Image (cartoon, rainbow, N blue to C red; front, side, top):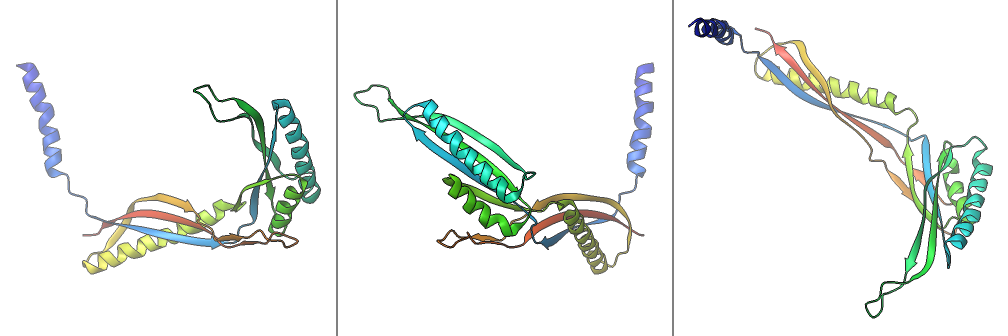
Length: 228
């Protein structure tokens, strides 16, 4: 009986609290902010792909060509430039199988992928051309970015927060309500890009590279209390 009485005594204050706790009245809104800026950094990815009858031959030819590419990029970008190998692969090549026999190795392919970070965007086209002239036979891609993206993201968050407040105020005015203090404010997502990038490889002396604008988008959710 004492256990039952104790359980009832514990339950009653909780039930009373649930009955007397006031329902929180609030308005919630989401704002989006977008800030654009010209990129100030590029990463160029070039590959040297070589084939030979033996694995050692393919690797040796690749090493010679890749070394030439790296040396030429350093001449153009400087000795302290960020130039690194980001991928290396050596794999066999197989011919077609015949008479249900397993495929036969016909040679080997070696691939060395080098990435160069370019701070002066005016040099991007020349970097591509220099790499190709030195022995690179594949351009994997070009990525444009910002060295200080945090500053741009902070600006986008401020814009998103201001828009979220404006939306909440409009909702409150439409309902004849007054906003109080902020209850919750949180970032609901940030997205970088897409960026406007156009490039073309022609017979011109320098490959033309035309960077556009990089965009950083932010979303902020804000919840305000409603004043009585």
